[in-house]
Amino acid sequence: MRALVHDPFQGTLGATGASLRLKGTAEMSQFSCRILLTLAACSGLACGCAGDQKEAETPAGEAADQAPVMKTTPSPGEESEPAPNGPPAGLPQAEPQSSSGTQNNVLAAPTLEPARESLSEGQIARIAELVNTAEIDQGKVAQTKAKFPRVKAFAAKMVQHHGHAKAEQAKLASRLNIRVADSSEAAALKTEGEATLTTLKSTPAADFDVAYIDSQVTGHQKVLAAIDGQLLPSAKTDTVVSALKMGRDAVAAHLEEAKAIQAELAKASSK
Image (tube, rainbow, N blue to C red; front, side, top):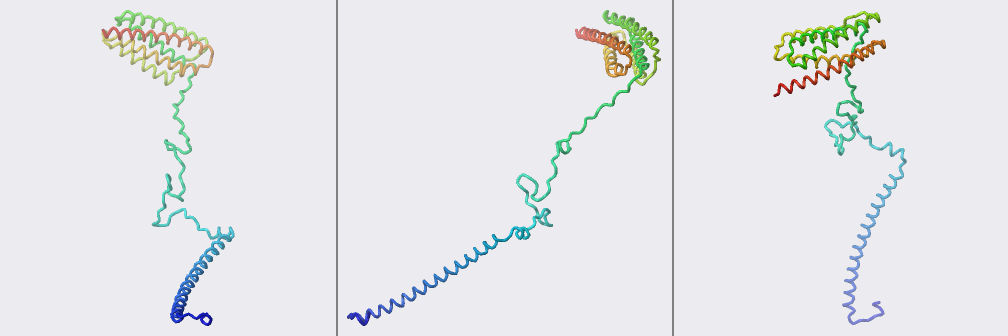
Protein backbone atom coordinates (compact mmCIF):
# COMPACT_ATOMS: atom_id res chain seq x y z
CA MET A 1 0.00 0.00 0.00
CA ARG A 2 2.81 2.45 0.82
CA ALA A 3 4.41 1.69 -2.55
CA LEU A 4 1.28 2.48 -4.57
CA VAL A 5 -0.23 5.39 -2.61
CA HIS A 6 1.69 8.61 -2.23
CA ASP A 7 0.29 10.91 0.46
CA PRO A 8 1.84 14.14 1.59
CA PHE A 9 0.98 13.08 5.09
CA GLN A 10 2.74 9.75 4.62
CA GLY A 11 5.04 10.42 7.50
CA THR A 12 2.22 11.22 9.81
CA LEU A 13 0.13 8.28 8.59
CA GLY A 14 3.07 5.97 8.96
CA ALA A 15 3.49 6.96 12.57
CA THR A 16 -0.20 6.65 13.16
CA GLY A 17 -0.28 3.22 11.54
CA ALA A 18 2.55 2.05 13.69
CA SER A 19 0.65 3.23 16.75
CA LEU A 20 -2.50 1.50 15.63
CA ARG A 21 -0.58 -1.73 14.99
CA LEU A 22 0.82 -1.65 18.55
CA LYS A 23 -2.64 -1.00 19.97
CA GLY A 24 -4.16 -3.83 17.91
CA THR A 25 -1.45 -6.19 19.07
CA ALA A 26 -2.22 -5.36 22.73
CA GLU A 27 -5.94 -5.86 22.17
CA MET A 28 -5.30 -9.16 20.44
CA SER A 29 -3.21 -10.27 23.39
CA GLN A 30 -6.02 -9.44 25.79
CA PHE A 31 -8.54 -11.21 23.56
CA SER A 32 -6.29 -14.27 23.44
CA CYS A 33 -6.10 -14.32 27.22
CA ARG A 34 -9.87 -14.21 27.47
CA ILE A 35 -10.16 -17.09 25.01
CA LEU A 36 -7.69 -19.13 27.04
CA LEU A 37 -9.60 -18.45 30.26
CA THR A 38 -12.87 -19.41 28.60
CA LEU A 39 -11.35 -22.65 27.33
CA ALA A 40 -10.03 -23.45 30.79
CA ALA A 41 -13.48 -22.90 32.31
CA CYS A 42 -15.09 -25.10 29.68
CA SER A 43 -12.50 -27.79 30.40
CA GLY A 44 -13.47 -27.68 34.10
CA LEU A 45 -17.16 -27.99 33.25
CA ALA A 46 -16.39 -30.86 30.92
CA CYS A 47 -14.53 -32.67 33.71
CA GLY A 48 -17.44 -32.14 36.08
CA CYS A 49 -19.95 -33.49 33.56
CA ALA A 50 -17.72 -36.44 32.90
CA GLY A 51 -17.61 -37.15 36.65
CA ASP A 52 -21.41 -36.95 36.93
CA GLN A 53 -21.80 -39.26 33.98
CA LYS A 54 -19.37 -41.71 35.56
CA GLU A 55 -21.36 -41.76 38.80
CA ALA A 56 -24.60 -42.28 36.88
CA GLU A 57 -23.07 -45.25 35.08
CA THR A 58 -21.98 -46.95 38.33
CA PRO A 59 -23.85 -50.32 38.72
CA ALA A 60 -26.60 -50.54 41.37
CA GLY A 61 -24.74 -53.25 43.27
CA GLU A 62 -21.62 -51.09 43.62
CA ALA A 63 -23.71 -48.12 44.70
CA ALA A 64 -25.39 -50.24 47.37
CA ASP A 65 -21.99 -51.41 48.60
CA GLN A 66 -20.76 -47.86 48.84
CA ALA A 67 -23.94 -46.52 50.53
CA PRO A 68 -23.35 -45.39 54.12
CA VAL A 69 -24.90 -47.54 56.87
CA MET A 70 -27.59 -45.78 58.96
CA LYS A 71 -26.87 -45.81 62.67
CA THR A 72 -29.78 -46.75 64.93
CA THR A 73 -27.95 -45.99 68.18
CA PRO A 74 -26.20 -42.64 68.61
CA SER A 75 -22.51 -42.67 69.46
CA PRO A 76 -21.44 -41.51 72.95
CA GLY A 77 -21.86 -37.76 73.17
CA GLU A 78 -24.01 -37.73 70.02
CA GLU A 79 -27.67 -36.82 70.40
CA SER A 80 -30.31 -37.96 67.96
CA GLU A 81 -32.63 -35.32 66.63
CA PRO A 82 -36.29 -35.81 67.55
CA ALA A 83 -38.58 -36.60 64.67
CA PRO A 84 -41.54 -34.27 64.17
CA ASN A 85 -44.27 -35.14 66.69
CA GLY A 86 -42.61 -38.38 67.70
CA PRO A 87 -39.63 -40.07 69.39
CA PRO A 88 -36.02 -39.56 68.28
CA ALA A 89 -35.36 -40.71 64.70
CA GLY A 90 -33.71 -44.10 64.33
CA LEU A 91 -34.85 -45.42 67.73
CA PRO A 92 -37.37 -48.30 68.07
CA GLN A 93 -40.82 -47.17 69.14
CA ALA A 94 -42.62 -48.72 72.11
CA GLU A 95 -46.04 -50.30 71.67
CA PRO A 96 -48.93 -48.00 72.63
CA GLN A 97 -50.59 -48.67 75.94
CA SER A 98 -54.17 -48.09 76.97
CA SER A 99 -55.11 -45.74 79.80
CA SER A 100 -55.36 -48.73 82.12
CA GLY A 101 -51.77 -49.73 81.50
CA THR A 102 -52.54 -52.84 79.44
CA GLN A 103 -51.32 -53.33 75.91
CA ASN A 104 -53.36 -54.00 72.76
CA ASN A 105 -56.49 -52.62 74.37
CA VAL A 106 -56.84 -55.76 76.47
CA LEU A 107 -59.00 -55.03 79.29
CA ALA A 108 -58.51 -56.64 82.74
CA ALA A 109 -61.19 -59.21 83.69
CA PRO A 110 -63.71 -57.93 86.33
CA THR A 111 -63.50 -59.38 89.84
CA LEU A 112 -66.40 -61.77 90.42
CA GLU A 113 -68.01 -62.42 93.75
CA PRO A 114 -67.58 -65.99 94.96
CA ALA A 115 -70.61 -68.16 94.25
CA ARG A 116 -72.71 -69.19 97.28
CA GLU A 117 -72.51 -72.77 98.42
CA SER A 118 -75.33 -75.00 97.36
CA LEU A 119 -77.54 -76.18 100.20
CA SER A 120 -79.13 -79.58 100.73
CA GLU A 121 -82.87 -79.75 101.12
CA GLY A 122 -82.37 -80.63 104.78
CA GLN A 123 -80.45 -77.38 105.24
CA ILE A 124 -83.18 -75.48 103.37
CA ALA A 125 -85.75 -76.94 105.77
CA ARG A 126 -83.71 -75.81 108.78
CA ILE A 127 -83.48 -72.22 107.48
CA ALA A 128 -87.22 -72.09 106.80
CA GLU A 129 -87.90 -73.41 110.31
CA LEU A 130 -85.69 -70.71 111.90
CA VAL A 131 -87.34 -67.92 109.89
CA ASN A 132 -90.82 -69.01 110.95
CA THR A 133 -89.78 -69.41 114.59
CA ALA A 134 -88.21 -65.93 114.72
CA GLU A 135 -91.31 -64.31 113.19
CA ILE A 136 -93.62 -66.08 115.68
CA ASP A 137 -91.50 -65.11 118.71
CA GLN A 138 -91.12 -61.48 117.68
CA GLY A 139 -94.81 -61.22 116.77
CA LYS A 140 -95.83 -62.45 120.22
CA VAL A 141 -93.71 -59.75 121.87
CA ALA A 142 -95.24 -57.13 119.58
CA GLN A 143 -98.77 -58.25 120.45
CA THR A 144 -98.13 -57.31 124.07
CA LYS A 145 -95.99 -54.17 123.65
CA ALA A 146 -97.29 -52.43 120.50
CA LYS A 147 -99.53 -49.35 120.88
CA PHE A 148 -100.42 -48.50 117.28
CA PRO A 149 -103.45 -50.61 116.22
CA ARG A 150 -102.10 -51.43 112.79
CA VAL A 151 -98.82 -52.65 114.33
CA LYS A 152 -100.73 -54.90 116.71
CA ALA A 153 -102.76 -56.34 113.81
CA PHE A 154 -99.64 -56.96 111.78
CA ALA A 155 -97.96 -58.75 114.68
CA ALA A 156 -100.99 -61.03 115.09
CA LYS A 157 -100.89 -61.82 111.37
CA MET A 158 -97.18 -62.73 111.60
CA VAL A 159 -97.84 -65.14 114.44
CA GLN A 160 -100.72 -66.76 112.55
CA HIS A 161 -99.13 -66.93 109.07
CA HIS A 162 -95.71 -68.11 110.16
CA GLY A 163 -97.23 -70.54 112.66
CA HIS A 164 -99.19 -72.12 109.82
CA ALA A 165 -96.13 -72.13 107.53
CA LYS A 166 -94.05 -73.84 110.21
CA ALA A 167 -96.61 -76.58 110.67
CA GLU A 168 -96.92 -77.17 106.91
CA GLN A 169 -93.17 -77.31 106.54
CA ALA A 170 -92.88 -80.00 109.21
CA LYS A 171 -95.49 -82.09 107.37
CA LEU A 172 -93.66 -81.69 104.05
CA ALA A 173 -90.33 -82.72 105.55
CA SER A 174 -91.90 -85.80 107.06
CA ARG A 175 -93.61 -86.79 103.80
CA LEU A 176 -90.43 -86.35 101.73
CA ASN A 177 -88.27 -87.93 104.44
CA ILE A 178 -86.10 -84.80 104.66
CA ARG A 179 -83.83 -84.70 107.69
CA VAL A 180 -83.23 -81.18 108.97
CA ALA A 181 -79.53 -80.22 108.84
CA ASP A 182 -77.61 -77.22 110.11
CA SER A 183 -75.38 -74.91 108.05
CA SER A 184 -73.36 -71.76 108.52
CA GLU A 185 -76.26 -69.77 107.03
CA ALA A 186 -78.66 -71.30 109.56
CA ALA A 187 -76.32 -70.54 112.46
CA ALA A 188 -76.00 -66.88 111.39
CA LEU A 189 -79.77 -66.60 110.98
CA LYS A 190 -80.40 -68.05 114.44
CA THR A 191 -77.94 -65.65 116.07
CA GLU A 192 -79.46 -62.65 114.31
CA GLY A 193 -83.02 -63.68 115.20
CA GLU A 194 -82.17 -64.09 118.86
CA ALA A 195 -80.42 -60.69 118.95
CA THR A 196 -83.46 -58.98 117.40
CA LEU A 197 -85.79 -60.63 119.91
CA THR A 198 -83.60 -59.49 122.81
CA THR A 199 -83.56 -55.93 121.49
CA LEU A 200 -87.34 -55.82 121.07
CA LYS A 201 -87.90 -57.07 124.60
CA SER A 202 -85.73 -54.26 126.00
CA THR A 203 -87.08 -51.48 123.76
CA PRO A 204 -89.16 -48.85 125.63
CA ALA A 205 -92.89 -48.91 124.86
CA ALA A 206 -92.77 -45.42 123.32
CA ASP A 207 -90.24 -46.58 120.72
CA PHE A 208 -91.44 -50.13 120.26
CA ASP A 209 -93.80 -49.74 117.29
CA VAL A 210 -91.13 -48.13 115.11
CA ALA A 211 -88.43 -50.59 116.25
CA TYR A 212 -90.60 -53.62 115.54
CA ILE A 213 -91.76 -52.49 112.10
CA ASP A 214 -88.23 -51.47 111.11
CA SER A 215 -86.97 -54.93 112.06
CA GLN A 216 -89.79 -56.52 110.05
CA VAL A 217 -88.87 -54.56 106.91
CA THR A 218 -85.21 -55.49 107.24
CA GLY A 219 -85.92 -59.13 108.12
CA HIS A 220 -88.32 -59.75 105.25
CA GLN A 221 -85.93 -58.15 102.75
CA LYS A 222 -83.19 -60.53 103.89
CA VAL A 223 -85.48 -63.56 103.64
CA LEU A 224 -86.49 -62.63 100.09
CA ALA A 225 -82.85 -62.28 99.08
CA ALA A 226 -82.05 -65.70 100.62
CA ILE A 227 -84.93 -67.40 98.82
CA ASP A 228 -84.01 -65.94 95.43
CA GLY A 229 -80.25 -66.21 95.76
CA GLN A 230 -79.72 -69.52 97.55
CA LEU A 231 -82.78 -71.52 98.59
CA LEU A 232 -84.54 -71.79 95.23
CA PRO A 233 -81.31 -72.47 93.28
CA SER A 234 -80.43 -75.23 95.78
CA ALA A 235 -83.83 -76.98 95.75
CA LYS A 236 -83.83 -80.31 93.90
CA THR A 237 -87.42 -81.62 94.01
CA ASP A 238 -90.45 -79.98 92.45
CA THR A 239 -92.37 -80.17 95.73
CA VAL A 240 -89.71 -78.20 97.62
CA VAL A 241 -89.45 -75.64 94.79
CA SER A 242 -93.23 -75.16 94.84
CA ALA A 243 -93.29 -74.73 98.64
CA LEU A 244 -90.49 -72.15 98.47
CA LYS A 245 -92.31 -70.17 95.79
CA MET A 246 -95.50 -70.09 97.87
CA GLY A 247 -93.50 -68.98 100.89
CA ARG A 248 -91.81 -66.29 98.80
CA ASP A 249 -95.17 -64.83 97.76
CA ALA A 250 -96.22 -64.62 101.41
CA VAL A 251 -92.93 -62.98 102.48
CA ALA A 252 -93.17 -60.40 99.66
CA ALA A 253 -96.73 -59.51 100.73
CA HIS A 254 -95.62 -59.14 104.35
CA LEU A 255 -92.77 -56.85 103.25
CA GLU A 256 -95.09 -54.52 101.33
CA GLU A 257 -97.47 -54.27 104.29
CA ALA A 258 -94.59 -53.61 106.71
CA LYS A 259 -93.29 -50.82 104.43
CA ALA A 260 -96.74 -49.20 104.35
CA ILE A 261 -96.97 -49.27 108.15
CA GLN A 262 -93.41 -47.89 108.38
CA ALA A 263 -94.37 -44.93 106.17
CA GLU A 264 -97.53 -44.33 108.24
CA LEU A 265 -95.54 -44.31 111.48
CA ALA A 266 -93.01 -41.87 110.00
CA LYS A 267 -95.81 -39.57 108.91
CA ALA A 268 -97.44 -39.69 112.35
CA SER A 269 -94.19 -38.92 114.15
CA SER A 270 -93.53 -35.89 111.94
CA LYS A 271 -96.73 -34.11 113.07
